Image 1 (tube, rainbow, N blue to C red):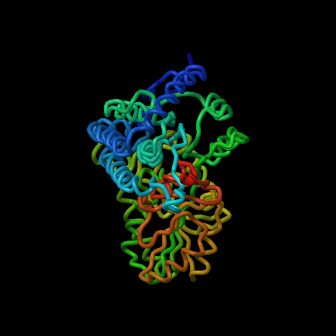
Image 2: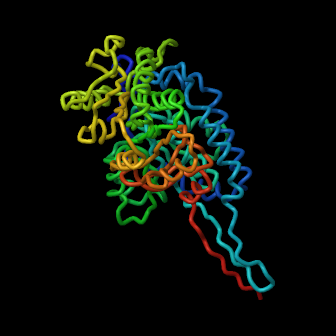
Image 3: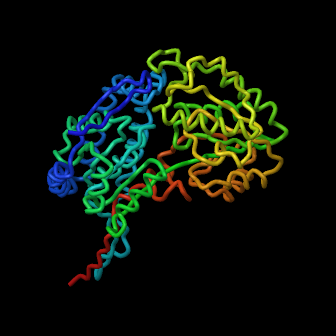
Length: 460
C-alpha cells in the first residue's frame, strides 16, 4: 500500500507516514457522509453552533501538543504558540453572525403571499487545506460550512498531515454525528477522480496556482462551485508621511514571520525616497537580530522552511537577483545554520532590485523581501499593480483619505492601512487575478457554502 510521507524540515527525517486511501474506500465513507449531512442540517442552528464550538474547544485543549507537531512538520518555532488564538477568533465571529447571515430574506409576508429567499446547505463541502497555516486556513471554510448545515470532508497537505487527524478527533469528541466531518488522506490522482465524479457539492482549495488550475480542470463541466486562494506577491507602500519606525517593525515582521510562508506575507516594499535610507537601516537591524535555528528551541525566532525544495526556490531567486545587480544588506555570517543544503535559510533583504527580477515578480513564499525607492503615489501604485497576483496591499501613511484613494486604484482583495498580514473575520477574505476567486469569512463567507432558494407561496 502506498503512503503519504511527511519529512520534517528540522533534520530531514521521516516524521509521519500514513496510508493512502483508495477511491473505493473514500466512496464508502462518502455514503455515510451523504446520509449524515441530511440529518445534520435538520438540527437547529443553535445545536450545530454548540457542537462546532465544542470541537474548536477540544483543539484548544491539545494546543501544546499541536505546537510541537507543527514545529516538526513545517518548522514554525514553538515560541509563537501555534494558531489557536486565530482559530478561536474566527470561529467566535462566524458563529456570532450565523443567525443573521443564514436567515431568509423576506420579500413579502402578507395575507396573500409569503415570498422569501432562504439559504440552503449545499451538501458536502470538500476542503483542501495547505501546510503553512494548517488550522487557520482550514477553519475559514470548516466552521461556516458546518454551521450552515453542510458535511465537511477535509484533505490536508502531506507536510501537515496530522492536522486532519486532530480536526477529526476534536469534532468526534465534541459529539458531531459520524460522517458529518471526515478526514481523508489520498493522492492527487484520486482527488481529481472524485472531483470529476462530482463527489462533492463545493470545493475550497488553498494552495498553488498550479494546484488551482488542476482543481478547475477536474471540476470542469460538473457545475460544482469552487473557491480558490492561490499565490500572492503582496506589496507595501511607505509614504513620505508614514511613521517609519512602526512601518519597519510591522512590515519586516510581515515579510519574515513563519519564515515568510504566509499567504498574505509582505514580499515587496516600496518606500518613499525621503525615508528610504532610514527604513533600510532599521530593517537591517531587525533582521540581523533574528536567531535561525531549531524550532523546538525557545530562543529560535526563525525556523527552517517547511521543505528543502521551498528553500531552494528562494535561494534560486536570490542568486538570480544578485547576478542581475541586486544588493544584499544582510550579513549572512550571522546565520551559520544556513549551509545551503537543507531547509534552513537565512533571512534576506535585497535593494537595487527591479521588476525584471523573479524575486520581485514570482511568489517567493520565504524569508526574503525586495525593497525599492519610489518618488510618488503614482509610481508606487503602478509598481504595486505590476503583478499577476492580488491578495492584499499595505499602505503606510497618516492620511486616511490618501490611503483610501490609493487603495481604490490597487487591484487586490484587501487594502490595509498601517498594518499587514492579518485576517479580520468580519471582512471578506478574497483575492483577484491569479490569486484566485471566491471568498471566506464575514457574512459573505456563508454565501459560498449555501445556495439561494426562492419561496413564492400564494395563500388560499
